[in-house]
Length: 482
Ligand SMILES: Cc1cc2nc3c(=O)[nH]c(=O)nc-3n(C[C@H](O)[C@H](O)[C@H](O)COP(=O)(O)OP(=O)(O)OC[C@H]3O[C@@H](n4cnc5c(N)ncnc54)[C@H](O)[C@@H]3O)c2cc1C
Image (cartoon, rainbow, N blue to C red):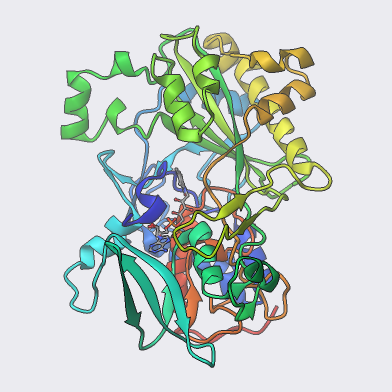
């Protein structure tokens, strides 16, 4: 799809924590990845006109990617009152990123049009004579010469295979799953694995290893006793259509009810927020369960969970593990480029079980915030709908929370790290700090897969930053190793 996942994602705009990028600099040995340097690329990408627009120290106004704050946020005032009661601040999370909460910033324009990497970066230059887009084309293999220089790519289109030679270099941007798949199909990957599927290894690299993703659980829905949510059958009317079309306002501008966002630290991660809270205002209506199940691949879990609550106002929180320790992998199923690769994310598999302990801490925080605060618990009467199959653990015990987190295990669609950036000689490294595939010539990977460690929030903005900064890095000298 043109624009990839940015053309279908939830549009949440989050840069990540400055420490995430300082860590990238440490891992890659290249200080240009420090936040103090990459911050300018974030600013350059933004056409920001959200609620923090006057803060020009942190936000850009002349970039191609439109970012704005959501304007339909029922009950967010009470959420902010509650988080204040709990000692958290309301502040812009795309700056130094202290713990706190904010109105959600989204990559959209007046609530009417999504801003994707395609609409921001490609659409405006479609007329360039030196650019050609071939849709419905599936790249199947990179061709190397005997010196391991990438000379071109094979691709299939309408059942025919074509070859495109390159003059300078091949840039692979197939995303975390497919960039890893394409490298392996082309002989770049773990030798033993490649041989096991009948592929002649060219360079032995840990491609597909280190798969990181943000595991997630939906805390809620919390039933509310007032009209403080987006209730589609109630809120969608002729007026809402006019508000949407003419003013870019109202319920129809809402990205699926998403309205607030927060980052907090658990006791295991002081000073570096490791939980992401995405606050959703969607009330329960007849289609609610199937929509959530369809979106997250949760079978009929939410359909069953909310079946007796249709018509009630509600909020839910997508509680996400921002800095997971668990790592999974991607492998080829076979040597057929059209076969789906094997994806095993291995959520909650870290040795010390820290990922689960952090999520339980976050679950407890959200339940207390909603049920015990004056603003949400007393004023809006927030009450959690309990997962019946976990009731045997005693409702609101830690064992109950773990059961709820595992029923079923979800994620926020942020896979990264399968073509991990690192220093030459680092056993995890697939690309160097300039994103060149180690052991080859004329080949780079530029997408989310090169992140050497997952950022603590959503991954679209840092992926676009990687693309923007990589192009400019070429013009500056490599800094000394850290
Ligand atoms: C449902 C969903 C919701 C998300 N929500 C958010 C959000 O709200 N905020 C946020 O920040 N992030 C979100 N993300 C994550 C974010 O969108 C991604 O991290 C980011 O877009 C990754 O960009 P990418 O360029 O690495 O890969 P992708 O966006 O996956 O792009 C890869 C492109 O390569 C193409 N491709 C792959 N293989 C081949 C091949 N062999 N031949 C030709 N083309 C190929 C694909 O079709 C695709 O167009 C979400 C992701 C999903 C899926």
